[in-house]
Image (tube, rainbow, N blue to C red; front, side, top):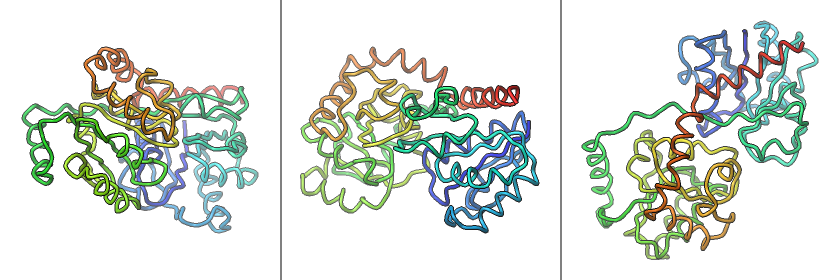
Length: 345
């Protein structure tokens, strides 16, 4: 099968980008896969992938961008074109009438009010059940995000990593339990809510990630006199190793599609607390969920996740995540959708 994947972002690396890297690399082990993506992502793909640099920083109305996409796809002559998220879906929809016959697949990664641009595809993949709303039932498919297994750290490695971080944050009591949050410091992640919820909880909070709100969040920690409880670790390339140090992992977002942090936490046997965002509500038990924006409920959910009972509640989820939330499973389900489309042609 000859496949073109289109990733129309232009610089950041979040769940959408990581999903695309993993999917393309895994598909390339079995099929001829071409990726149209910004030049900054070139080194994210293995040697089996045919990488085509495209400057997606340009507007989705840019005629030169549209012409380049049409020319590249017609030159490749794929069986399937798969657009990841909204901008890619809109771009391919605009030029589809100029393409040689090809099956068109779109993927919805986040909450969108208008799904019309995705429904233009012959098949629509949603990364959680909630995201299928507004998609014609005969086109909709659910494929959860998956990750590659992370090698387990030895106890010595964990102790050293923890010691290195506490050395930078000496005012923290390293004997306390550890709550961890991993994500961009941007409004949608609502880290401010998490900081508020952590007041009165006898545990440390490590915030892993960076973004435009870092200064204001650090000011909030000072205003609430939580400097000895909260540490900002910034952007870390070893975030999945850090998860192994946590007692529980927390999501305080206002919106999500299907957060990779949840997948990584469950695969690392870590309990969780979260707001009731898409994807998470399909997995976590209700005592570990809080209404979006509700600090007191999130506080109660964190306390529940830190309790002795939590491990027992999560044991079935740990096993399920390791069995089903994998890159291999995600890839095989996506390939099956392609095959079914091509058979129906």
